[in-house]
Amino acid sequence: MYSAMQQSEKSGHPRCHYFIFLDGDAQVKHSSSGSTPFPNAPWDEFERFLRIWEPAVGSIRHHGEEHNCPKCGSRGDVSARFRMDHIVIAIHHEAASNLLPYNVSVNGGNRHCFHGPAVFQTGIAGALYKGHILRLETLTAGDRMNKNPSHDCAGISRVHLEVKSSLPVCYAECVRGKSKYDQPHGEPQPKHPLGYDFRASCPAAIPCLER
Image (tube, rainbow, N blue to C red; front, side, top):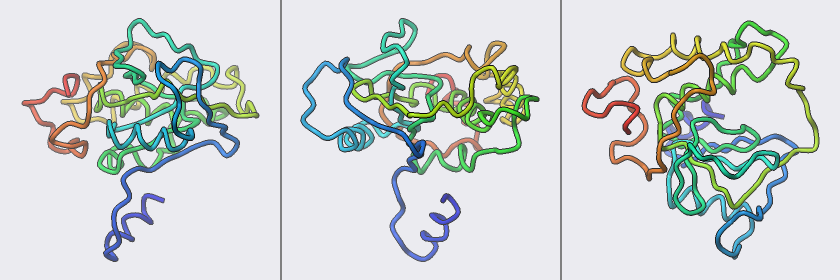
């Protein structure tokens, strides 16, 4: 899809604003935790969230996840997260060069678990876009099938080592802790004026953890 977009741009067609990925059996609905009424259909609400905030990565809460997160920054019905459930995610076109395509070769040493590429992408996003990985809390997403039980993914947190080795030095230090669960969340922020396609330049004036 990313390659198709690049070819489309070269042909003079408008650029898409977001790449949206979702499980084939994903069901998106309004949650009961929103602070306001729901005037829009769920997907319209998600699109509105993307237009207003323009996150590097936008996501929806999985129906089994807790809404409250004491360490997560929040503003109204939007929270900052260093990781996201990949049942529904939207990747800004300026962040796509850093996050797409999925790296299908990583698995943390566990070839039986297919979550490696998503964990790797989450780690890259967490290092580069603190405060710009945002979740809309008024929606939840669920799927009818549990395709890969967690016990099949032992050791998958080791993917964070592959994340760190793949980043330029100025961002590798942002991969903290011993696993994918130790990254800082940050505070929700609208799109940075410099945009999201900055990885190659390593701007010293804007450390990645403070963007």
